[in-house]
Image (cartoon, rainbow, N blue to C red; front, side, top):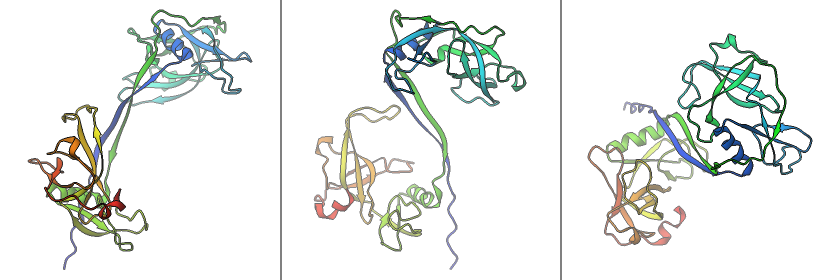
Length: 319
């Protein structure tokens, strides 16, 4: 008998993105509000060092620091790296240098972009100045970038009370990760089977547990798994949660239920949405079956089968 052909190993670009919201203390609020007003503020420590960007606690002594000072918008490049291929969301769309700039009057360096015609135009010691963004909102992006600017260093600082009209109290920073995911042979077989409305797991040759989705190895025994076992399609709700917050780009009305479902024959619960029943009637032990949409590559949701609820002892090890 000829061995079955190896499955195509899949890959797909994926994006993980969410907005990160944080409130600001008095020091960070003053710093970002100052940028909106074209003013750069640092904070002076007890031993006279000026930190830019400012922090609320001395990194050496851990003492709280609130002594704000205004410094110059010019500075000196302390180190740099050329970026020949800018990515989405970076400060400039044309090649630029990432630079650490010690602004005049500061004792620490600020990371930002330097708009330069090429790497030959950048060196440690290059004098630069801030190029302000035309529209400023109270964020680090109010500094559009740095640009070369010949000037003498001006280390003078001026005490600043940190008071501005309409201060920035919080920021929302989008966090995003772009990557290419390859599920490997085991999960590629699993995904291919789903397109045929079948669910495949893999059995460990040692402990004999069936894992769905398969990982290619048993997480308990650490040995390879290659025996494929079809499970389900029916299963049992082991645990669940009620979702009350609508997700972006997900066309499902809230509230709805997301559950862990132990498919018949599997020793690991997978997750899925429960439909066809009011959310407040979903319960542990509920027997469910998959519902497929036309052309869908995975179950759209699971619905009750009408069978009696499973006994707790039959799924308690899968909670």
